[in-house]
Length: 207
Image (cartoon, helix red, strand yellow):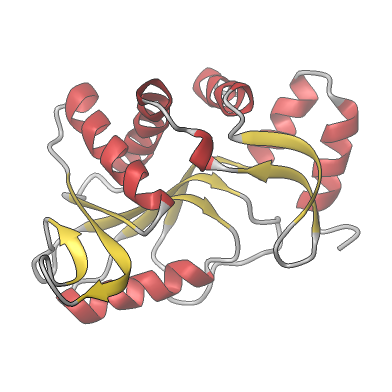
């Protein structure tokens, strides 16, 4: 696999952002892995995550000028990606984010930061993609508020199974890594137990 992807997976494991094992998800399903980008809780860690997200954003959506970070984890990730875009690539990407609930005083409203102009090229930055449902809601909220539709979505980990399609109408998605990358990593490192469990999950076996 590509060295940068392998290094990113190694970082996620070492930092506790990615764990392999047997986990029960909120939905009640069992999963052989667990992703928590909330563990990227320092400047050094956010530098790594921000770099990968910035590179994925600029490669997939070079027209982007504005990053959106959905509350809550997406906020820090969008900021980190914007900083990395400038520091490493000389691209001055602006950013904005939202609140869970609109504020009635001070900075009123739901959105904070550099608010988009109609038609501006916005890329949503978040931690993971599962079935895309929450992303559909966020895209609709941005389109309603600013008359602009995000041109793409970038996530650190695309954790969809092979047969899980994106919801209709969702913008294109790019990811730093996905489940096929994790399967390849486990195969290369000789972790056969976790590799087989993840492969079965990825292929949709034993739901």
